Length: 148
Image 1 (tube, rainbow, N blue to C red):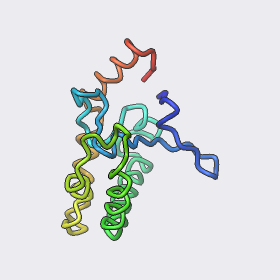
Image 2 (image 1 turned 180 degrees about the vertical axis):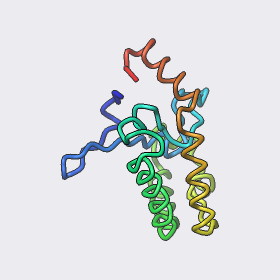
Image 3 (image 1 turned 135 degrees about the vertical axis):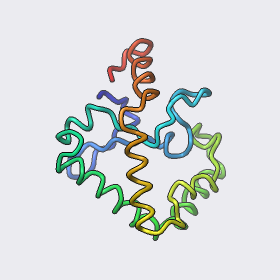
Image 4 (image 1 turned 45 degrees about the vertical axis):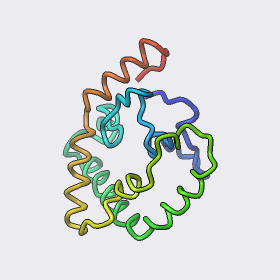
């Protein structure tokens, strides 16, 4: 999948990391139409790279997501404080529709760890091959030349 430079982070180790601050801060791809509605982008290409549904790497991916959300729970207040401060005087478009309460709720701070695991599993299912994600990728390919 080709991404534009604004959505690629290069770690000090040389690893490429896909990021999308606009999406994280409530600006869904598709502009005013908010076309993308999946919790995150999980295409068949990503799943194939992991070895397919049910592979050990795919299961490991889900475990890492669960562990990540469990770890983030401890820092929700800190993250929200930082993002709130950054948003106050920002003119960046990712803050145009930013809502701190909605941002905080995305971390599901009140779920038990067992509930959080189920929630992550549901997010993966919703994201996996989302039709709207596929349609948006086709739109990008047709109108901007960005290959999905």
